Length: 350
Image 1 (cartoon, rainbow, N blue to C red):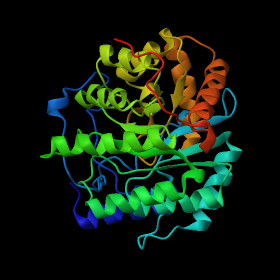
Image 2: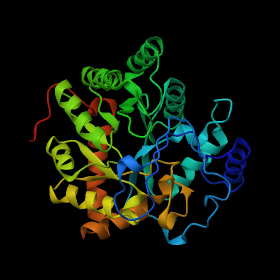
Image 3: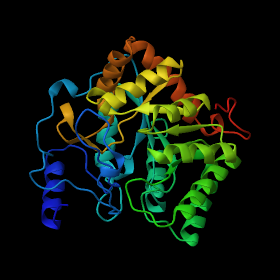
């Protein structure tokens, strides 16, 4: 873990280079090799912030081929921590930076982003971004499961915000089940997901889910029990049988920049396409990726390269994948009236 001075130096270097600001995100780093890691061997931490230490590789030059260019048409980022990228230390939004980034992303072929939240303050910033960029930002409000559980009072305040802003919201998220942080209240965490699943069903909103490894099957059970019709399992890492059950239930799955350098991600892309389901594409920016991305924080401009890598993995034309992803994104998140509903998924799977 970086010292405070090293962390500040790393963040300052990012700002000076005018690349994406590495905000506080839950620790979720896997082994950098190309094979599936042992989940029990992964580093787990409850730390809210994870900043690479000085000299850890964050300044390595990124492979220029992976600077996104528009490939295959307009793209939607299905999972982005936009508010974290543009938040100042005092919690306000750097609007000059936000305007500059949106202009650059649009020029690069990015049509929109699902902007997720991790708590109530970040949800409020996400709503501010939605108001400023109504045709670009698809807002998701939620509570990240790797963070300590909020109090009942804080949860009620978040619920009230979601209900009050229902017309501006595309999803409830990021919500789910923890894996990387040590959790002593498993039943309470599961009930928190059940609460958000029920709220999504009542309000007709899909869920943007963080649920990996053992948590993926558990989250799937909660969604079925609560009758959630629409959900997106972001950055899914789960056994093949669980992936099949998620797809059979009609829920959506995305690939990240890992599809350019990890077998696991390429296998996921192939599993989705074998079922004839559309792939969504995400960056989870500003998360830093290894491999050809050189430890740089991700941004939506990488989507073109992610699409190209996915197309190579599944043996399909990028244009077709892009068109299917656009239709799936808009069907899932496209507007408040397009999302959710009551009742169980059409196909319960096995």
